[in-house]
Amino acid sequence: MYAIVDIAGKQYKVEKDKFIYAPLMEAEAGSAIDFENVLLVDNDGKVKVGTPSIKGSKVSGKVLEHVKGDKVIVFKKKRRKGYRVKNGHRQQFTKVLIEDIK
Image (cartoon, rainbow, N blue to C red; front, side):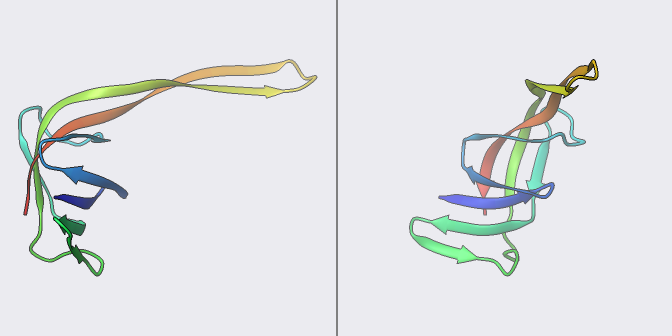
C-alpha cells in the first residue's frame, strides 16, 4: 500500500514504516503530523485517484529529526574579467516516519 502526498508543493510517494525527507516543517522532533492533501492511494491494486485530492483520506507520520542535506557548491565566473564567486548551501529537511495511511 502506498500513497502520493503533496507536502509543501512537492509530491512524495509514501509507504507505511518508511522514511521521507520533506522540506523543513515547524514541528518539534517526536511530534505527530498529519498530511491531508492525499492525491492517490493504491491498496493492493485498488487505485483511488483524487480530483485533485481524496476527501477523508490522510497520511499520519512522526517527526524524527531535522537534518541538513548534502552541500551544493554555487560557482559563478565571468571569463576574462577576473570575477569568481564561490558559495555553498545546505538545504534543511525534516525526517518523517510514515505510520499510517487512511
